[in-house]
Image (tube, rainbow, N blue to C red; front, side):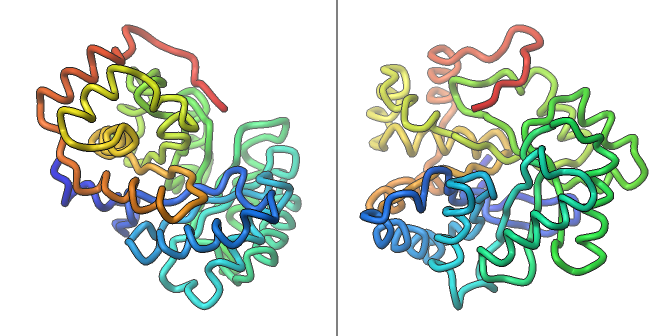
Length: 281
């Protein structure tokens, strides 16, 4: 995949969104860092990282409030994503949770609303809530997070379940289990994949195999790790709380991983040899 084609991810509707976006897990929780985090989010949008992913869980709404403040006046530039907690994901609870998220985000509509992970409520209940929200114009698309193949098969067999737009999962060089069955299933079904923690919350950056490839390319380990995710046809939503880090990771979009680099990464981080339970953070 070329760097140019990696810049966009196609949704089932045909709409294209930025393949490299911004995550917000742990943002908004430290007042001393607030202005720096706001500056980072704004710079990311300036640089084309216009998918902004958050959730009601993050800081009990603090991340959503930060996003709402940071992106005030720029809503039309953003593809805004949030998530409902499983404990809220019955029909009425899904609608109420979304309305609370909209208030914190200072907007009238989400572009994408996800079930954060599967809980006690039947998928039919959550799907009914998503349908109500779409009919009310409060969300444009809906999807899921942390659902494996069996869950996706169950979901898409429900009336209206085949409208699922996205499955957001833990995916990076050190967490490749989804390549065995979930990624092929999503490709076949036309469901877009978003990778959260695409650099394993920074832990991946210390791996010597990644560092060696980065040095050979004149890039940073973070850029290589993100470019690899993009090359798999998934979107990546790394978290960043500083403008300097935003500038660094934005370079992943234009980084071409030649076959020798990809082979070296496969040797350092082997693909799965069989079915692997879906991992979560």
